[in-house]
Length: 185
Image (cartoon, rainbow, N blue to C red; front, top):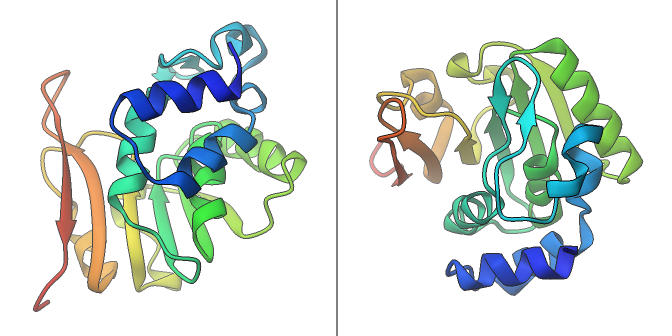
């Protein structure tokens, strides 16, 4: 399979944003997974990464990113960098991306992959994503990769008025991905 095949899978899953589909074609997912996961890189499946984690299924990544309706000047906060493929897509569609990853080795891998891919408008920091990253707030958009029972209050506080936040809500396999927009505080 190829990046074009992956873009076709995302289109089949309902993604219509041509800028996003072009980003999926041009950001090689194989460069953002561990070496033993490269054979699956262009399949629409999660890939196992260290610490018992998995990458998000590409069509779900695409639907979540599309839901944010990013513009070229948007400041984006990503919670859960993983190996950085989603970060690279966000960077292609926005002005600036700050990404928080809790595992230092995953953050280092993501930084290296982003550098190799020529992504200059994304920064990966190590920390607890449920606290957000107040130093660069407010954000026009926030994407949370991992499921939580509810939106962490610091993330809601760091979202700009009219900003969008997308995250899976729920626990253990029964989560639902939800898009929020901040209105009236």
